[in-house]
Each structure stands twice: as C-alpha cells, then as structure tokens.
Length: 295
Image (cartoon, rainbow, N blue to C red; front, side, top):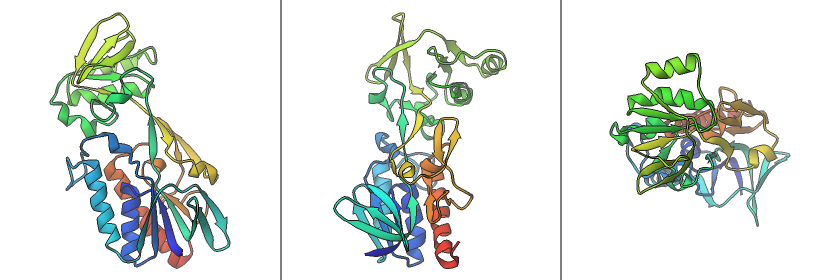
C-alpha cells in the first residue's frame, strides 16, 4: 500500500508526529522496533500530565490513541533501508516494502556509557544523565558525577540543587581556573582517584585505592549514538553537539534531503520526553503542510 507518510520510530516523537497527521486524515505508516531510549527507567518524569508514569505505559497509551484513527497502520520491526523512488521513498521492511511520499525519522539514540564495571547494569535505576528527569527522586541524598567528558563540570554545577554533589574526575577532565572556582561556589567536592567499579543493591562507588562511597545516585555524560543506521545510509547532514553528532534539521524539522524530516532525540543536541513530543508535533505539522504546498 502507498502512504502519505512513513514514520520510522514509534516512541514519543514518532507518536506525536503521527497524531498530527492522523488528525489531518492522512495515510500514515508507523514502523517501530520497540526500543525506546528510556526503557531502562521505571518511571518517566517531567512531562506535564504524565509525571511518574512508567515509560511502557506512556508509550502504549500513545500507540492505542494513535491506532484509533482509521488512516494509521503499525508495523512492528525495523526499517532496513530507505531509497528514493520517482514519487517519494521506498522503505525496506525485510520481506516487503512500503512506499511513502514523505519520511519522518524518529529512531532515537543509544546512550554510549563509560566502560566502568557495574555501571551499565544500573543505568536508568541508579545511574542517570538528566537531573530534571531523575534528580528529585534522590531525596536530596549524596550525588556523584563521574566525568566522561568536559561536560561533567556543567553537570556537576547543576546537581547541588538535588543533593550534595561530588565530581569524580576519573582521569578524564580535571577542572582548573574559572571552572574550579565555579564548582567551589556551588559547593561541589572533587575526587581525583579513579572509579574502579560500581557495586551494591543501590549504588556504591569503589575507588581504585579501595575506598567505598555510597551515593543516592550517579550521573554521567553518555555519548549520543544513532539507534539506527538509516540517517547515515540516507546521507543526511549531521551537526556536532556537546555529547555527539545529531541529525541536522531546520526549524520545521526538514533534513538535508528533500521530503525527509527528523525529530526527537536523534535531531537534538539533548533530549527528554517533553522535547521529543514537541519535536514530533512540529514534524507532523510541517510534513502535512509540505504535502499541501509542495515545500
């Protein structure tokens, strides 16, 4: 079947884009592999009206509401490739393919975590990247920031509003000069001994010298990695952000390739559920208008 729009990625940005197009009675195909970025967290926070809702519950609600519209179809699985054809694009879905006049990429990112034993297993439960998403639940307990990039100083400057903060420089970035003075003004403690591993039911840092430090939570600066290779396969332009490259778009979420739009975490220097929903809304509206006006 031919569609007006194929949305690749059915998480928060893709669902939001699809909703705008469904309400415009456009034929929409959503292709989703079911790997949301925040699937490791027990609750999603900071999104008005849905604060504290489990990620899978929030996504399922959005999917059910979107599929209530008669012009929407859902395909569970991965898009293998997207190729230009005379009247739009062909999306390879393995044994079959679908054609669409417009493409919205909302495939998200993976978090590239520091290679510290015990850290990945605690990701989303005791180890985080966003204080707005997870800081309040730490109950003003002691917080650690493990440096994996120079952005650790920025993160450590923010976190004292959520609890007494220690920056573990970990041989990655040792602040000095103005950075050091700014951290001191915020009351951030410094620890230069490397972190050997994370242990315990909660989070306990074991340092290279054997010392153990119990914390309410740990924050890191993960590298942004595309969750899908489609943007690279299509030759889209990228822009470099503080935590990695993201797909370059204009204010209407149009990429460097005509007829291809991108939204959500893959098209932002930093993201959250709220940002993803807003991005998806813009992409959906922009695609609808492009179908009308040929933009």
